Image 1: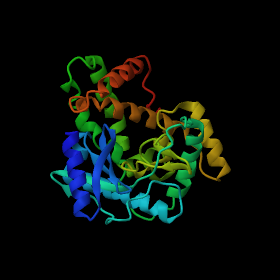
Image 2 (image 1 turned 45 degrees about the horizontal axis):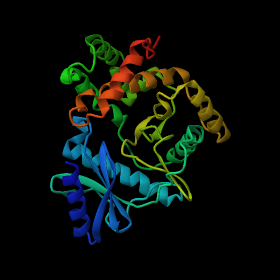
Image 3 (image 1 turned 135 degrees about the horizontal axis):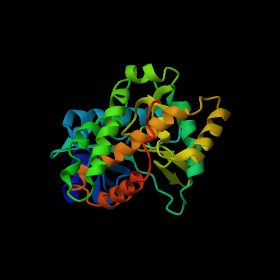
Image 4 (image 1 turned 90 degrees about the vertical axis):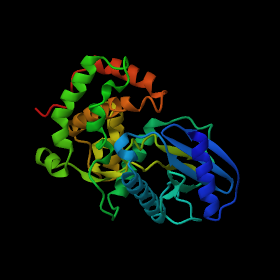
Length: 302
């Protein structure tokens, strides 16, 4: 499948007038990311996503949102990976694949991950995205969870039946709260709702010789700021709050954070049906589920 995606990306790029002699895979997991050498262009081809997100209309809207947000950030002079300026700002279809094109940047592979700095940058990103002018749908990263939870037994032996029962029971509590903005704000009327990154912006960055660039906006959505800090724990939450306070921004709400942390757990567990497409997920889900079994449900609203 990777080889087919590479061929499709190269063919699409050539049809758009780009020179492609040596397409080189940079990343191959949820998406295939291809440097279309010698052009300074990277193609991203989504490959392994939850079934509802792979539906053609949903996938195209998702990719268009990512392009729009990234282009807007660049227009504001902010440090983000830029859409390719050599092609139209829209997803491209080729040989049954959908893809987007991006400006190639040289990653600084010597840079060590710095989650403290990344967390502070997440607060900075929220300050910028608060002014994003386009209307976005509500909490799209969770759209695939209900269907996936119905098929958690698709990979026999990965999860225990108690895990499956617990995940479904927790979603019965959280699902009605998280499905619409109206339902969420009825419980949390003072929540800070705005455009957010949608997928842990503190580590979805690319270090370069000229600084760190925000990246991977495919899950950009309307939601509470706490979703972007889900699963990172109270210590990094304090780092975020210090950075937010320095910017005059709202701080994380502890009760909302608990709900978002619980929702993030279910989002990870809901990746189980994807294991046949992406076998490398199995060990991570198995390890995560083992830790989850020993923790109480922290998403209650009492």
